[in-house]
Image (cartoon, rainbow, N blue to C red; front, side):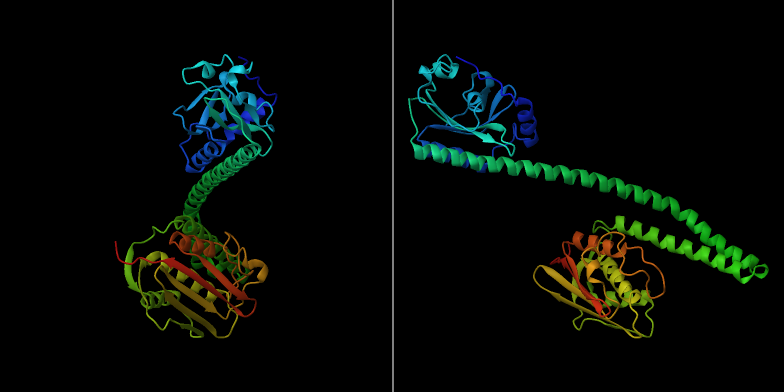
Length: 405
């Protein structure tokens, strides 16, 4: 017997193999189907998808045998990967110097026939083999060899799909970890800033009341500017806290309510001016859902429609429909619209619609990102259509509850 040599690219091969994270994984139907088909096509009782580690062969799939693998130094497949582009066929192992004293060949149920193709990664490095065995002398015809090679290519596709999925899972895990750190950082910093800001705003009010008689107009303007800056930063911090607190739809309980009743309460809170017309849906839809979450979506979208509108008369239309799976809503206005170049990123954190709103304030770009998070956590989606200087329409859906839990 001649034990298989170690390939020159062994270290690179093992690094690529371990990236697959496939060793000792659970059985999978996609692989088992291929070994069964290989056995049938090649007319052999045994077919195996064999993964070759540093010291062992491990069977990802085995048809016709209960073995789970073998030591690499007695393996047939260790010889196959030495010439990874060539199909290795051994018609009678007992007559081959490499295998005649092999324990699998001399056992009570011997292996006398072997044929195998290497399974290559995207760099051409062999991860293992697809092989067939027989206890009798055997030989494949050309069609069978072609079919075995084709089945090997299918295994390669499965392995590379697994590799890509592993990369995506690792990236997602890293992204989730980074987002968690950012959320914790933003929450901590925001909370730590709230009290000093409140003190700054209160101090500005005290200075104005106590010393306004001894200050000129410029001094009073400075105090007003100080207070307004504090209020702006406070709004920004509250927006950040809302954004991270509302990444999940657990900000309120699921209950039954009528949409128009909720909208009227929101309109009262917004203190709508006389020059604003808000048209509610004709159908006062009864909804079973997360009242607080849905209310915050409408609060943010209506607030934007009011702030980013330069018309003498503001007109906002609200509509809703329902089907078996979703409630669908739309809010359209006659405001300033969103430039086409900004529409694709408008739901990104810190992206603003315009430099300043109706009252001359600069937005912080948190509201729409928060809305998107809430909508998606409610099982829905949100999109917009807009034309600059003509208005915007936001359409969103939420997954419906058929009854209260």
